[in-house]
Amino acid sequence: MDVVYKTHENQPAPAAEAHDPWKGWNDWADSKIEAALTRYDESVGEAIAHFKHELRKELQPEIHSLRAEVATLTAKLDAARSDVARLQGRVDEQRGREHARRLVLP
Image 1 (cartoon, one colour):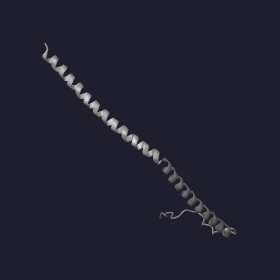
Image 2 (image 1 turned 180 degrees about the vertical axis):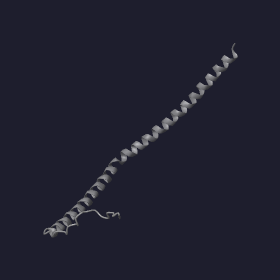
Image 3 (image 1 turned 135 degrees about the horizontal axis):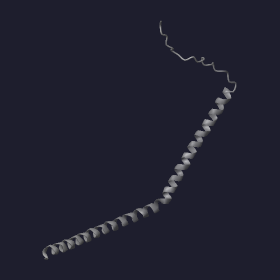
Image 4 (image 1 turned 45 degrees about the vertical axis):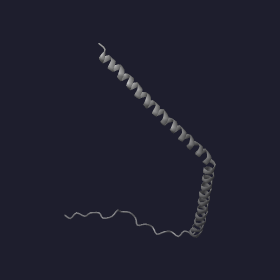
């Protein structure tokens, strides 16, 4: 007995495209809509770019001021860290002397 393998699905053949009496109208309307959306996209993009430029120009002095303030605060923080390190050194030195005294004293 021979085994027969199925090589395709039992689906109906695709139907031939039916004639659409509105095809011309739909194609024309689609092209008009596409053109309008393209112009709209370009206009929105230009408006956003203009707004972004104006906002950046308006905020630039504030940004400059904040950058200067950050630089000042960073310098103060570095000075404070240096002071803390110096004081920590003095504390460690004092603890070392106290420890040495305890070792020497009976």
